Image (cartoon, rainbow, N blue to C red; front, side, top):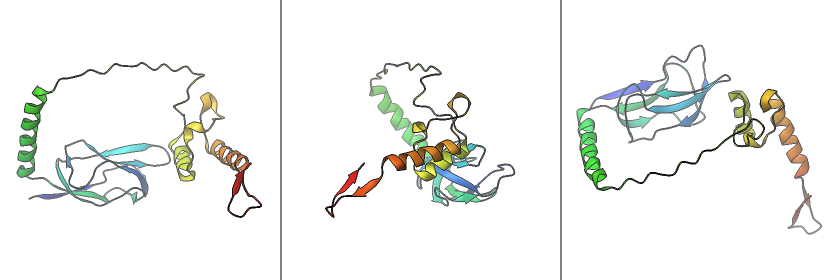
Length: 180
C-alpha cells in the first residue's frame, strides 16, 4: 500500500491557526477535494480540502490544535485496492438503489425580514470564537453595531447581565440553593 501524507497547504501569512472542526475520522474513505478540517483565524474560517483520495490511516490533529503551513494533517493509504473496494461498494449500492422508492420531501420556505432575524447572528469569526470560549450562544446576544452585528463588548455585556440575573444564593438549609 502506498502511504501518503496530507499537510496544511499555503494559508497565507497566518501561523498557529486554531483547528475548530475535524470533519473526517480514521478508517474513512475520502475523495479529492473532500473537506478535512476547518481552521479559524481572527479574520476568517476556512475548510482545508484533501488533495488525494484514499482511506485515512492516521489522523494527526484534533480540535483545538494550532497548525501552520506544512503541518501534517493525516496519512492516507492510496492504493488500487481501496479504489477497487469503492467500485464494488458503488455497484452494490446502485443495485440496491434501483429497488428503493424515492420520496421527495416537501420544501418549506423560510422568509426573513431585516427586523426579525432570530436564527442568524452577524458576527466576526473573532467574536464567534470569543462567545464559544465563554460558552455563550451567539444567537442570544443582541448586537449593538450596524444591522445588529455582534462584537466582543456585546458578548461581555450579555455575560455580565446573565450572571447578575442568575445569582445563586444559599438558603438557610445547607443542601438547597435558591435562584433569585
